[in-house]
Image (cartoon, rainbow over all chains, first blue to last red; front, side, top):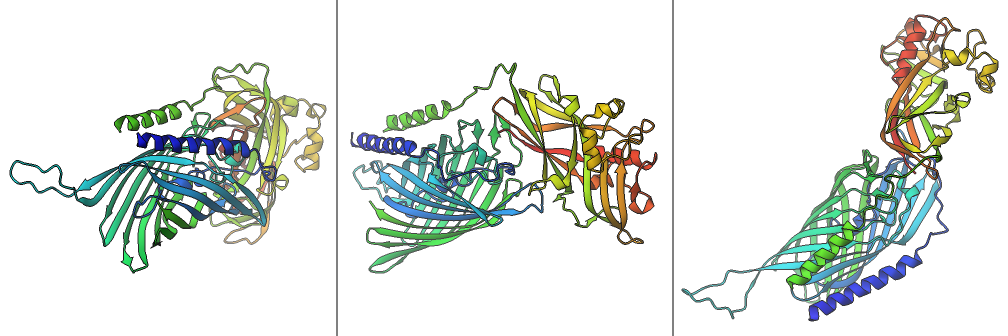
Length: 333
Length: 265
């Protein structure tokens, strides 16, 4: 069974990666928590999980198989305190990812994401930095391809005729996010609990995607639900629903394919629980508009996107997402 | 192919299901003690209180303060089983002075050696009760000196100032007139000591190795616009020992506290 062997290899590789990195990420001695006494309310795992979230997309527009690197830049503003006139801190999240979509056969494929997080917070002139391996995730997908209706003559059906794809397909994904990034409880009491390289929990990921692609236009939609586990500090981020929808088109030249796209994406976060109790003002939602383009040259796909929040209500309005952009280079498999 | 799919799903379910922990249940806490930090945070409505800022109130009046202090005493917490832990009475009186706030304007009161338990509410008094006052000057311990230094005493026979607001106020007819609200009990003839009980939004878990923080917001605006709205231009700009005005301020102060949130660290 070729499929099974492929699958085993991937699992093994992933396991090796996880176990080797887990040891390497002992406490960062350079990081000290500065104003422990001041630390306030907490939101969701904006960073730990959302950089591997469906609202960022798991792959390329055309749903092609690839391996590549992606850089995501996000910035936020968080209220440092509980009042309307409390000062604000600025958070900058940089994420470097190795991501891939690897086929198992023509119906099954796996997407995976290995992030490295580099987070900076600036408050009243002082900066603090946190970096390290983030939470690795992997999703197994089943692709249901739809075909054009076959012509039948009378009562006989020609089973040997090659079926013509209709361009429509559904993808069902089930996956897991692993606690490979370090979670620090002291940091969780921050205004922006997303200021973590990882959530410290094992999360389940359930996804449903719909794609349509013709030679002129393509549609790319995805819904994902994150079932969040509790970490060792009995801290549990709220379950999360992510969605995205993009429309793209093609411009082809001899040398390259240009695919500009525009769409919306969003996340809805449930409240955080700690010691079995829900914490107030820790739920939230955000709706983003994004646009960008992919450029395919031979085997390479270059991509860039810019995302701007349209509407947001994150954690009692204590956290404000400002913008994010991402660039990536993928090599088609 | 189907088998593979189901195996995958099963593996995931097992992984997720095996990740809950409930090691805190049924724990024996007897003999364990921990600390609680009370963080008093003075506010005016949704705003953090700032010295010198002009705050509007009812009756088209406004005020500015350069002193903001009050006394809190007899702090006790009740656990989920109904037991009350009273902090040792001889150490159980505190002056909350805005000037002592950290850069976020929070004034810390640390209660140590609190019995380990799951606490659900806190009760404290505003001011000094008659029982403590009846202990005489000797019975006040160090607190008498502290209160004198902080300007929270009139003299022994009149007793403590429970709250001290100094600043100015303006109205339609006055501009930057002195504002001094010094409310307290008047000896034993007038008892303005009041208590407040506040429920915690989340259980406060006191353990040997955990110091929960209780963030208490005090809305100073309620001193003038609490249960009763008072007009500064009608005598409430100078509140000292009056039998009429002090009980109104005392009742208003009872409504100014709320527990905003707790941290279980």
